[in-house]
Image (cartoon, rainbow, N blue to C red):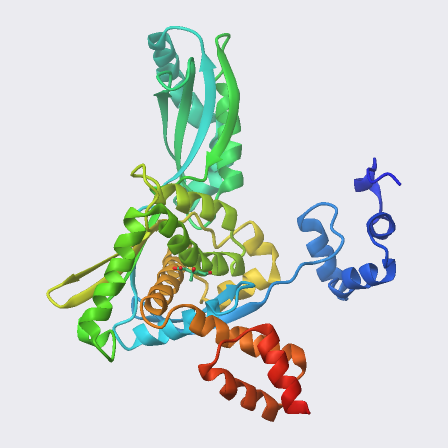
Length: 423
Ligand code: MEV
C-alpha cells in the first residue's frame, strides 16, 4: 500500500488519524487511543493547540517542574522548568538553595540589540551603491514607520541600518545590516516585517535581493550572571582542592571542544527548560548560544571561573533573545502562568533568570563531576524509576533504595532483587 498522500492537510483531524493508523500501524486501535489519550478533553484548549501548528493530531506533553529558592539580585524566584531529563530540576533546586545562603546570584543585562539582514547581490561600482544607500537611508526608515509605530511608543524600533560590503567573502554580495531594539518582545515577526519593507524599497535595476531575515546570532543581546563566595564556604571537606578541580574543569572546557560541547549542553539543560516554560524559542536560543561559544574561532565554555584573594567566582555570559510579551507568551496558558510565577518579568529580567538557570545547572554538573561523579545522582533517579515501574510498595521501595546505596544499579539487578524480595 502506498504511504504517500495528496491533500493530507485538507483532511479533518479524524480523517488524518484514520489514514495514519491504517497506513502505519498494525494495532490501529492502540495507536488511536494513544493519540486520543494525549488530546485535551477541553475542546477550546485543544483547538488552541491545534492552531499553533499544522496537521495537529495530538499533543506531546513534557513535564513541567519548578525549582524554588532562587535569589537573583536580592529578589526571590521559583523558576518554572519544562524538560524530560531527570535530575535537571533537582539540580537547579539544590544549587538555588546552596547559593541563596551565599549571597544569591548577581545578574546584569549587558546589551539588548537584535539584528536582521537584507542580503543582496550588486554587480556594479561600490561607490554607486554607497551613494544609492546614502540617498535611500532616510526613506528606508520612513517605509517602516507604520510597522514600528507601536514599538517606538514602547521605546524600541530600528536603531540603525548599515550597508556592509561582503564581496571579499562572496562575489557581488552586500547586505543591509539592521539593528533593532524590540523591548519586551522577542521581535522575530517585527524584525522580519521591517526587513521585508526595507528590502522592497531598496531595489533598483542592479540590486537583486536574495533574502531578508532576522539573525539568531545576537552577540549584542547579552546577559551575565555570576555567583561568588569564599573558597572555604564552597565545600565542607578540602575546599581548596575541590575548588581547584572545579576551575580545572572549566579550563578544560575552554580548550577542548569535545568537552566544551557537553559542558555547554549541561548549561542548555537549564536554559532551554526555562525558555520552554516561558513560551520562548529554544532553537533560536540554542543556535545563538553555540555560535557565541565559537566566537573566538574555537568552540569554548560559556561559563568562566576564577579564584582571587580566596574568593571563588563563577559566571556565565550568554546571548539570549527572549520575549515576555507577544508570540506564544500571550497564547499558551502555561507560558502565561510561568511568567506570572516569575512575577511578570520584563524581557531583561527574564534574560537574567534564564542565564542564572544555565549557570546553576553548570555549577551542579561540575560539582558532581569533580567530586562523586555524575552517575551517583543519576543512578539514584534511575533506580527510583525502575522501582516505580515494577510497582513496588512503600516498604519494598525503602528496602530496594537502601539495598542499592552501595551497589551497582542496573535494570536486571533491580528486577532480580525485587523478585527475590517478593518470593
Ligand atoms: C547531562 O545532560 C549534562 C552533563 O553531561 C553536563 C556536563 O557534563 O557538564 C552532566
